[in-house]
Length: 110
Image (cartoon, rainbow, N blue to C red; front, side):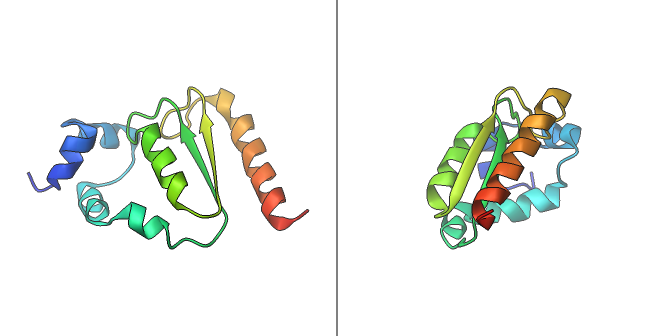
């Protein structure tokens, strides 16, 4: 298999199938991303960051969002209960909009 072995270990052997079903990314993009030490790179981010992560995300575990949040200096993590990777549930749309507006308002000082 051409994909980085860590990908299979971390997300399961069906990850590419799940990514394809989610309409996420191509295998080449996954390979490239898996070579990047995202936790080390995250410490370099100086901008205010809002991460919206679904609690029912089957592509990226919610634990990864918490780990990333701990590394970014100015970070707000919002775990959206019941949301999947692409936030396809109509019921979460209002919550997403509210969180984004709150974040933008807080970082802009309005």
